[in-house]
Length: 193
Image 1 (spheres, one colour):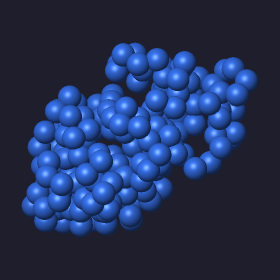
Image 2 (cartoon, one colour):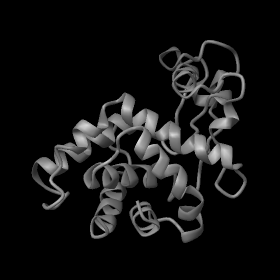
Image 3 (cartoon, one colour):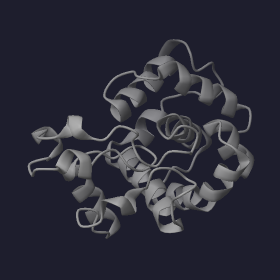
C-alpha cells in the first residue's frame, strides 16, 4: 500500500503513517490482506483502534481485566500486565500467548514488546509487533472472508455493506463501539483504493 492509502484511511499524520508503512505492508503480505477491500477495511478498523496509528497501548490501566478468566487472566496482576496492546489492542494472557506463539515472540515474558504507550516512544520492534499482532488478530478471526463480502463500488453505510462492516467491528471490538468513526475512516480512504 502507498503512504497515501495508509495515511488517509487511518486518518493519521504523515509521520505516523511513515513509521508504520513498511510494518503494515509486511503484515498485509503475511496475513493475505491482499485486495483493496481487505486493505481498506483493515486500515479503517486499525485506524480507529489505534487512534490514527498513534496509540500502541490501551490508555486505561488494565485493572478492569483483573481476574477475567475469559481472557486467561488467572494470575495476580494479569489485568494490568496484559492490557490492550498493538494496533488492534490484543488483551489478556491467553491472547498474548496465542499471538506470541504465532509470531515466535514470548509476549508473556515481555508484554511491552507488543507495544508501548504511543508511536513516539516505541522502538521499531514494538511498532513491527503492534502491526503484526493486528494482522494475526484479523487472520485468526477470519476477517478477510467478511471483508470480501463488502462491495467496494457501493456505499459502505447501507445494506449488506453496512451489515458486513458492522460484523467486522463486532469481531474486533466485541460490540459496535466507534462504528461511526470506523465508517468515516473507510469513506475517507475508499477514494485512494
